[in-house]
Length: 427
Ligand code: HEC
Ligand code: HEC
Ligand code: HEC
Ligand code: HEC
Ligand code: HEC
Image (tube, rainbow, N blue to C red; front, side, top):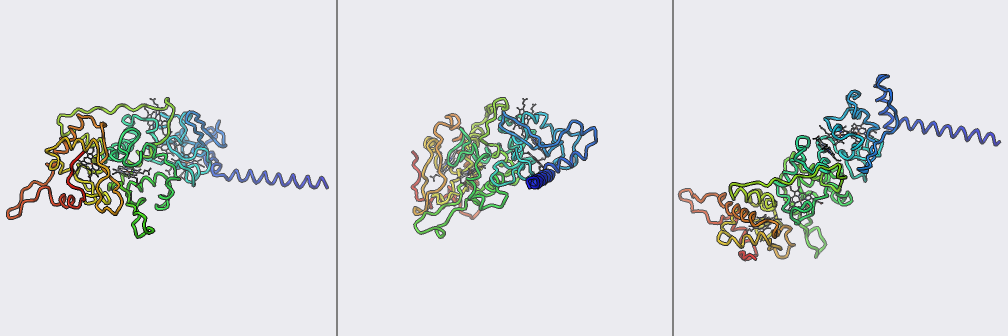
């Protein structure tokens, strides 16, 4: 009897073992390895072993098993025509040897996973989506703080960085120690937790990851933040305005470049030996004070709210001036005789701004204070630029028979009379 039990148990154990081996053979990585090894000549196989392969990069705190399937990644002579058997494009692995860098520091994904979907980060609760193709450029900034130096290899990262400045994003967002705090600091938006995006994810199409979240936001900030009107609220609760972030009307290539730049703003802090420090921005010389002032206007992100070139038109829900941030084309008309008050306005800002309707909530945008962050020399140049904007107003050359246009123009007056505020006395 004992013998029978022993025999049955042994048979069961053998069966379980065979099942386990069989299942292992059917694991995804195993199938890829078999396909790959079958393609090799006898002499090419020599010295190559199967099984899970992993690269441990303790300096970067990463363990990557990507090469379990991506078997020819650093062996161009063995590559096959399709993934995961291609060799790596370009010289990236020469500059960044696999043993010292692994893969996930550039590509994201889940280093330890050995199934395609999981490894590529395409599973719930994994917060590092795989960066494919051009999106990989986002990762370069964590080590190459000197972005200019790698512009040929990461052109979209450089473009995104330039766009961030040109569109005036700094007027509302700081990145670490530069920029305004009208809205959130974006220094770590590239590693922002998915938990904080859950409500947004519900309002957008999948895939629900940081890449798509950023793209959705940049294409139309109001899509994820449409506001709540009083009809949809219990009586007595205050309405919520849509996102105060302007709809920039970005082109798709601009959205891609900005997404890459923002994805690269992470909490990642590699050891100094991996980092090339940033070069200080070159100090520009200007021949003309107005050109200098224009550069100051761009640097501090005034265009964020006042529009590129100060032409206005950015929405400010319930703002006193026609629900828009005012155009700056009329600065000369208002402050031409009192430049000191203009300077004080820029130094001290104006908050809160007057409301169009006192029963509705406070407008989201206000004129922020720059204090002494703008140097006196830059401030003088900025003022000269602002005063020069009046030249952009249509020349008062009425056609015969027409009445001459009022000064300032009709639109401004409409805006002004909508304002509950008296004409400005600044301070
Ligand atoms: C289990 C096998 C397997 C593992 C492990 C694996 N991959 Fe892949 N990889 C594939 C296959 C198969 C493809 C072909 C395209 C696909 O199915 O997504 C691929 C494609 C890719 C591509 C090209 C993507 C595209 O769609 O153009 C990149 C980049 C990539 N893998 C990176 C990685 C990184 C980084 C890791 C490690 C975190 C990794 N892979 C781990 C199997 C794997
Ligand atoms: C220094 C950063 C860096 C590292 C490290 C790196 N890659 Fe890449 N990888 C890139 C860049 C950049 C591209 C896109 C190159 C191009 O399109 O010319 C790329 C492209 C690829 C592609 C081609 C498909 C695609 O998305 O364009 C695959 C597959 C891939 N990498 C896999 C890997 C694997 C596997 C490893 C680890 C052994 C690895 N990479 C390590 C930067 C890196
Ligand atoms: C984890 C840090 C890290 C990441 C991420 C990284 N690099 Fe590098 N890279 C380095 C280091 C370190 C070197 C070697 C620097 C040296 O030798 O001066 C290097 C070298 C290079 C070089 C060669 C420079 C030269 O003159 O020899 C280029 C080009 C380059 N990286 C581009 C990129 C690009 C493009 C990306 C993003 C796709 C990237 N790197 C991502 C750390 C990184
Ligand atoms: C006029 C002010 C303003 C300007 C200019 C502005 N934003 Fe915003 N931004 C906001 C406000 C307010 C929020 C928060 C409300 C929201 O998420 O819609 C925000 C949110 C964001 C977020 C989400 C941050 C998070 O953690 O939730 C990103 C990313 C962002 N902005 C990027 C940009 C970029 C890129 C630019 C320039 C192209 C820009 N913003 C210009 C006001 C602004
Ligand atoms: C976050 C949005 C925002 C940014 C960034 C911003 N402004 Fe303003 N600004 C406003 C708002 C809103 C007003 C209107 C205040 C009011 O209603 O009284 C205003 C008013 C002004 C005015 C007065 C216009 C008038 O018609 O009275 C000037 C001048 C001005 N801003 C200059 C600047 C300059 C220069 C910069 C960059 C250094 C700048 N602003 C950046 C929002 C902004």
